Length: 300
Ligand code: PRT
Ligand code: ZN
Image (cartoon, rainbow, N blue to C red; front, side, top):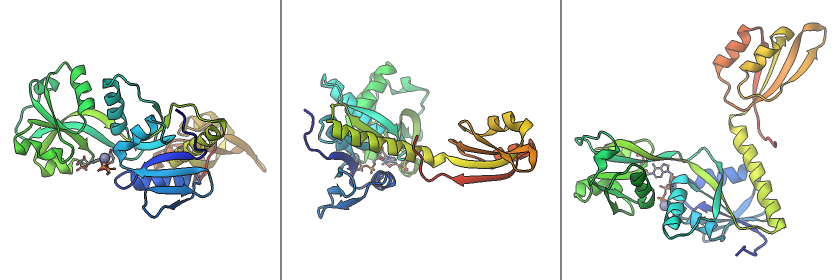
């Protein structure tokens, strides 16, 4: 059932690793909010867009059940929810729109330092503690491994010390938690980062217009992160080579230089990082007056 409220609802993590980044991203899309007293709701001041601040694990369900139109969460919780629903014979009613390039981590298998691990077959008949039972189950199935999954809702890393599991399967980013618990990472199960998901329920035309607008701005914000505006002067004869060296550039603007028939000014937006090496290479084939400027906003 499509939610009848005229305002768009976006589910974000209330507090934790993704909370600040998620809010910051929406603010950079031009959305302004006031927080409710209980800090669970943000009212959109300049657009009909409100935020529901919840636990990250609840976000995929809120979007799938059409309580929220959009949600930002780790791909790890989204994949786990999708697989849990599949196990119940249901299909997740959401789709990923963009990967957001924060919250990077991996779901990985780790074990106590002295255990030999020669590949996924080493997990055969072992006990593995995890909060991500459905994702681990799928991984083991793909690897043709039969193992016992021991569910832990948190503090998975203590399972081997408690003697209740031989391996753990948990999220890792820097690896310091594993090291502090004398555990060694042996296998990546799933690479994750924060993503934005959208309900599959059809929206009213008015709501769809706002969702499209937010997603278009978000696309612009994400593109702008790495994008740079490059300006340089170059000999006309080197133009083809110059364009080839510009990272991820669309057709550049070429402007004649007053009083100089041989050289032109080249302006281009590069969608990939511009390194010093690129500038040095451009210079070596005749470019001069090189300028690299940050791009603040972009609308494709
Ligand atoms: O209250 P709520 O349920 O919302 O929060 P939470 O405690 O479940 O989540 P939170 O804030 O810890 O993580 C939210 C999301 O951030 C996760 O779902 C991932 O998508 C992403 N993320 C990125 C991580 C990590 N990195 C991470 N390192 N989530 C958890 N960890 C934990 C991991 O579980 C382990 O305990 O950090 C520890 C390992 O970190 P390192 O750096 O020592 O390897
Ligand atoms: Zn959580």
